[in-house]
Length: 271
Image 1: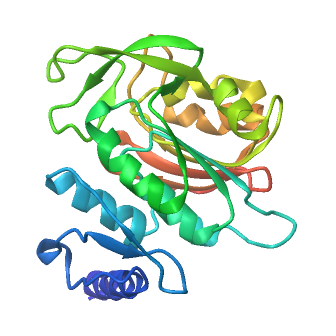
Image 2: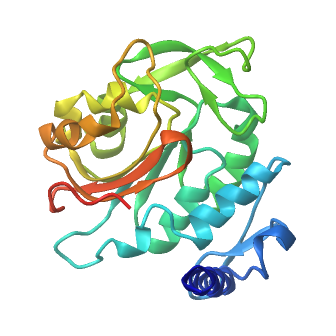
């Protein structure tokens, strides 16, 4: 009974959010991706572009209807304004679209190295006025070999048995990405990371973490370039950069999402 009630509440919440986006939605299995979205309360619409495949539907529901990263929970008070947003692992731009509606005046930079997604990402970015950088983000500046996955929606800098031949792409360090958005040594108000394991090396950069006001992180249980990946170590890694976990949400396959900020409560309970 409780499970059915939770399912109904989630369904009604999704339908409510879909109406705000100007999108028809009955349930996930009947949902078709829209070609336009209402981006603000005034009814302004923007065009959309997506690659084929069910993975995009999953991402659309998670980011725009379920608010997976908790954007609506971020306070808008004058004490904590969000003026700058760094989206690392932008994919087709759905997080940035959600962030634009939540923070209409913010300056947004999006990093995405997957060439198969850039055409679609740039359509979304043009609609919200975000800057796109076709680069990977990592521990240092330079170049890396990027391996797209078979579904073309994701990729990694580690070769696997499934992702074939890699391509060389530019890589920008977290420090340089922060500098580009906020100026040398400046602070970025909101950083989202979803980069298929490359996050672990960046999380060891304490100096850069100390320049982030709020971090929304999807972590992955795999090592990149020999960097240790232990989800149990995340509270200490973030605390070393002055960030505290507000919420930790376990997802499939040992992955999870963390909301962290400078004002968060230490050791936010997983759920």
